[in-house]
Amino acid sequence: MYAYMAILALFTFCYAVIAGRVEKTPVSGPMLYVAFGVALSAAGPWLEPLNLTGETLKTLAELTLALTLFTDAANADLGVLRRTAMLPRRLLLFGLPLTILFSFIAAALLFDDLTLVEAAILAVMLAPTDAALGKAVVTNTAVPDDIRDALNMESGLNDGVCVPILFVFLAMAADESVYNSIFGLAFKLVLEEIGIGLCVGLALAFFGARIIRLCARRRYFTEIWRRVPVAALAVGSFAAAQVLGGSGFIAAFAGGLLFGALARGDKEEPLLAAESDGEVMALITWVVFGYAVIGQLRVPFSWNMLLYAGVSLTVARMLPVYLVLCGAGMTPGAKLFTGWFGPRGLASLVFAIIVLDARLPGGGTIALTAVATIGLSILLHGATAIPLSGVFGAKPRSSGA
Image (cartoon, rainbow, N blue to C red; front, side, top):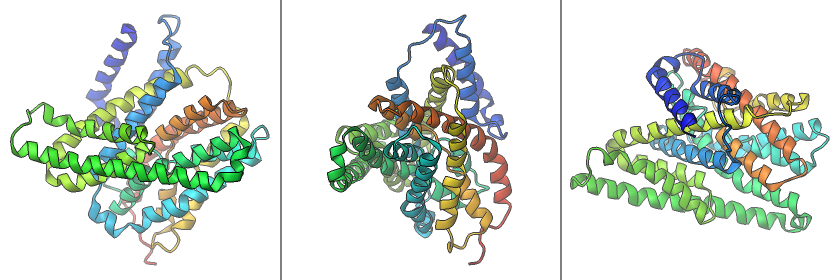
């Protein structure tokens, strides 16, 4: 353990001192993290293998995603969001269901060994976009504010929306009698996941922001501890919502939005510290993914897994986005850009572990396909984020429609 700890600490140090230079190149941080994890896995003859469980990776991914969602939401420009609410609304209300539908059709056609319910599970697993992998785009000022905030809002909410849908399909796969009460179960799960998540996230953010402001005014903070509360609030919102039966991802994102609105000018330094924590957590998570998942694969990806991964990242995502943004006054290039930057990452990874734990007959195929899609997304979205953002930012996005 100490050998791995030393290696990971040195890798983190090396990346930290060159991160500014790396982030200006087509080589993204997650690409390097995963590659390092794979290389570490290949060092097995010289290092005793680590016994990492799926629960360990799931917990890391969840906490990383919670921190990222909270800080990205808190940094969002609410003025821009109010003016351009139409874009995320179209992406979530119409683009997400269409993406799931197109992905389901592709899975049903490509995988003979999956039932229709399992094909639906795969489609839902790979529908959410990843806030962490999309960070290079949503923080790039070359991309217009409305596009960046729409992508940020979409990635913040779609994983929370997909959680109850995934559980409905898992219940259907486990018990055929659920078919008789499917609409009641779906309504109950959606209401609980979203409702409880919103209530918990907003309540904790409201009181947290008030307490932070009060304590700062009375000088109760020390210089060191003032950097801690935001990260604690993000993780607390996520965990509390999960305990109460809601979506922790919804809680983290909704809480971040309200916290950012209430904190206003007092949020920059605490948020910067929380973002740093999130970046370190992301590094660890993707290194573990490279080590324990990609590096330990003993079964090759089949042609239909790789083909589905490509379809999931392109047609099944880009076509629905293009269709739902028609009439939004955007050029074809802007619509294609918005559709392309829907990377799959931490949420899909968490869902894959949940599906594996459910021990479905087609669980292995589903998990391997998810891993192929996430890996391809890390590579393709990471390599294209900077170049395409620069090209897109230099062109007008409105078609005048």
